[in-house]
Image 1: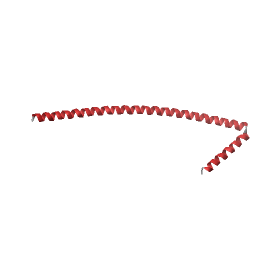
Image 2 (image 1 turned 135 degrees about the horizontal axis):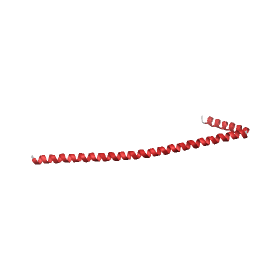
Image 3 (image 1 turned 180 degrees about the vertical axis):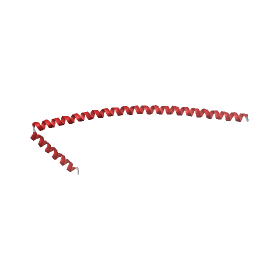
Image 4 (image 1 turned 90 degrees about the vertical axis):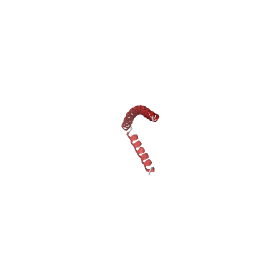
Length: 103
């Protein structure tokens, strides 16, 4: 029976060693996954910041263009009121024709 007990002890020791190794590997995998998730999170954060910056720049550019257009229309209305009214009527007619053709 001595050899049977020794074999059982060896199997238990081997099972314990395998369990410890599996636990160590699981910890290592968890650390790697966590590290990868952190890197992805950092990259997403950087991309988000870049997108926000580009959005702010686009918004500022749009405001600038709108201001320039408003100034141009104001100057046109003051300097050439008849031409400005004729262009507004033409633009309205064109938009109405586009609107009607879309239905």
